[in-house]
Image (cartoon, rainbow over all chains, first blue to last red; front, side, top):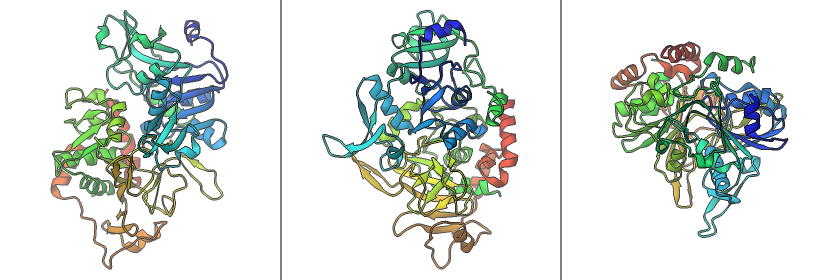
Amino acid sequence: MTAGLDDLIGPLSAGSVVAVGGAGLVRKPMAASARDLVVVSFLGGVDVELLLEAGCVAELHSAGVSLDAAGLAPRFRAAREGGTISFVEWSEGSLVASLEAGARRLDSALTRSGLGTDLPAVNPWLRETADPHTGAPVMAARALVPDLALLHVPWVDDRGNAHVPGDLAADGLLARAARRTVVTYEERRDLDPADAAISRVWIDATAHAPGGSLPSSCHPLVRADLAEVGRIAAGSAG
Amino acid sequence: MTTADLMVAVLAREVRDDDVVGVGLGTPLALCAALVARATRAPGAEVLVAGAVSPDADLLTCLRGAPALAGRTAGFVPHLDTMDMAERQAMTLQFLRPAQVDREGSINTSSIRSPGAPRLRFPGGLAMADVPRLMPRVVLYHTDHRPRGLVERVDVVTGRGGPSERGGVRSQGPTVLITDLCVIAFGGEGPRLESVHPGVDPERVQAATGFALRAGRRVPRTEPPADDELDAMQRIDPHALRGVEVRETRADALPRMIALLEGGR
C-alpha cells in the first residue's frame, strides 16, 4: 500500500483488531501491512485469502468465508484445518448483534441468533442466557470494537461523506463500531451529502485508492476480476 | 427431465401464496425454485433476491446481482434489514442446503469429521445458525444423498432442527428435506420417507441414508414437474443454470454460468 495510506491508518501492532468492509467478492479494501492482526470480516472472501497469504492474521472473526461461485476459500480452509489461525465462528445475526453492542459501547447485546446451536461452544463471545425481564432464552453477544475499520467505496464527496449505491453490507455498522475508520475510494465527486451512505461523522480519514477493491468489485465503477478470483480459488495467486 | 428440474419443481411447491421467501445468489437451484413458484402456484409470494424485492427478471439476470435488477424490482431491502426481518418473522421461509443433515433436521455447515482423514472445514455458520429457529418454516435440500451427508447426528450443530418456541417466536424448524433421490418429512415420530423420485426405490434411499426412515408399505413416486412448471423453468432459466448445484449437471452448468455472467458485462 502507499505510504500515505499507511500514515492515515496509523500504528497497528500484533493483536490490533482490524475490521474489513464489503462482502465476499464485493468492495473488499485490499491493503495489508501489520502481522498477527485480529481480523473481523463479516462475510469474508478474497480479503481473507490475501491477508492469510501475506501472513497478517492471528485470529479471524467471521460469519463465513468463501469465494462465492468460485467455491471454497483454499487458504482459509488450510489455515483452519492446520490450526494456524484462531477462527472465531459467528453467524451473520450474532456478529451484527456484537458489532451493534460495540457501536453503542455496551458490553454485550441480545439476539435470538444462534440459539440452540453449537456456536457458543466454539465462540466464547456468545453465551445463552435468560432475558432479565421475561426469563426468555436469548443469546448475549459480547461486543467487538475494532481498533480500525478499513472500508472501500466508489465515491467520497467534497465534504468527506462516503457514497455507496446498492447494498452496504455491514460497512456502516463497522464504521460506527470502530475506534477509527479509514475509507479508501475510487473517485472524489461532487455529490449531495444528503445521499451519502456513511456520514463523515463516522469517518476519520479518506484516501484515494483507485482499484483498491480488486480483485473484488466496487459497483458501479469496478467489476470483479473473476480470472484472478479463479486463480485465488485454485490456490495459485496472492 | 434432469434431477435439477425435479428438485426445482418440488422446492417450488413448498412456497405458499402468503410466504416471504429470502434467497441468495449462492444457491441458483433454490433461487430458480422461488421464481418458478411465483410464476405458477404462489403468485402472491414475495421473493427477496440479494436484497431486491420480487424482481421481474430471469435467473441469469438475478445472478448478476442487485445492480442488474435496478428498474426491474419492487424495491430493495438492505442486507442488515433482512436480519431484523428474520428475527421478527417478517420473512417466513428459507431454503437451506447444508453439508450435513441429521434425523432431527439439525444442520451442519461448519465441519465434518471423517475417520482416518483430516477434519473437513466448511465456510462457517453464515445465516444457517440464525434461520432454523427464527423462520416460521425452513425447507432443506441436499443434492448428494449419501450416508456421510445424511447422518444420525451432525458433527457440529450449526442450526438446530425441530420445532421451537423461544421468546415468543414460534418456529416449525426444517419441515422437509428434498434430495436428489427422494423427499423426507421431519417431525412426529421421526423422519419419514414421503416419496421417491422416478427410478429410485425405497431400499436404495435407506441404504444411502445414515438414519432410519419410516415409510408406508407403498412409498409414492415424487410427482414429476407439470407442464406449467416446466414452461416456467424454461422461461426463467433457459440456460439450465439450476443444474449447477447437482452433481450430474454441474460440470456442464458451471462453465456455462461463468461464461454467461462474464459475457453480460
